[in-house]
Image (cartoon, rainbow, N blue to C red):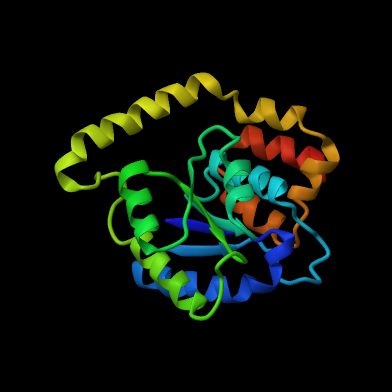
Length: 212
């Protein structure tokens, strides 16, 4: 599994700490972590949480990655931005039990963590435990176990509803403000990481026309 880490501008200084906690857990699972930044406060390509949503949707819909780990000060803005797009189900994760239940009940493909609110002493340990519970076992098995079948049925219903309520991602990208879109995909490592991993030629071709 390929997992993207993305930080928006207000929490860019924590990128290294988050990456190290995530990579420690993922290395044990044999998962690949791709760090799309922002890497620090001085990163020349500044991402808003809205642009994090755009970038996450591009990565997931193109199958360049399988999962996105992100957040913002409260985690709420990032969660809302990601959930604005098709084929993205993002949970707001505060602690390890959130992570486990989101994985098992909602079977999503992205999480948004509050990296400022409540992020104090021992925060790096909480991050590690969140990632451990998030990827502890195959997602979508249901929780509690005796409710596995109705939980899986509810997730299928949600997916069917979202197919109706969301437009195609390429159509959305073409309608977005060009400067907003270009800013979302102008990170130092985007070209290198995205184009070698994307499995969607149409999205790749369109984005090449945007950034050259």
